[in-house]
Amino acid sequence: MPVADTSQLISGVAERYASSLFELALESNSIDAVSADLARFEAMMNESADLKRLVVSPVFSADEQKRAISAVADKAGITGIVGNFLRVVAGNRRLFALPGMIRGFRQIAAAHRGEVTAEVTSAHALTPAQENELKSALKGVTGKDVVIAVTVDPTLLGGLIVKVGSRQIDTSLRTKLSTLKLALKEVG
Image (tube, rainbow, N blue to C red; front, top):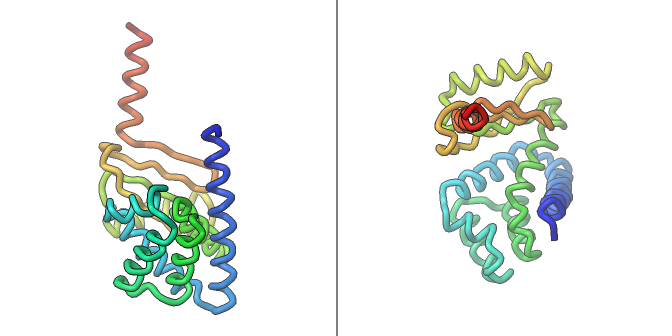
C-alpha cells in the first residue's frame, strides 16, 4: 500500500473518531473538559517513549492495549468521556491514529469557538510571552483568535515550523542549513 494511502486512511479514521468525540462532548456540554483531558494524555504520550510505543506499535494485542491504556488513564485521573473514548479506540485497534484524533478534535473544537488552530513545532519550549507574541502575530495574519499546539523537536536546532490549515511557515535552522547545503552543492 502506498504511503499516501496509509496517511489518508489514518486521517480518515482520525477524523471520524474526532467528530464522534466532539459530538459527545457537545451533547454533554463538556468540550473544555474533554479538550483538557486530551491535552493531558497527549502530553503524557509526548513525555513517555513507552506510552508512545504502545500507541503506535502493532505488536500489542487489542486486549493488551486496552488494559494498558485503561491503567494509564485511571492513574492520570482521565475518566468519563475521554477515559471511555481511549478504551474504545484501543479496543478497536485504532490507537495508531490517536495523535491525529487529538489534533482533529482540537481543530473541530477551535472551529466551533470561531478560532483557528496553529500547530507549532519549536526547537525549545516557548515561554508564555513568546506564545502570546506568536498568537498575536498569527491573529494578524488569519484575522481570527489562534490556539497554538506546541511540540518540541530539538532536531530543528532553532526557529519554528508553524502550520495553520494548509499553510506552513518553516523558519527552522535545520531547513535553512539544508537549503544552504543544497545551494553550495549546486555552486560546486
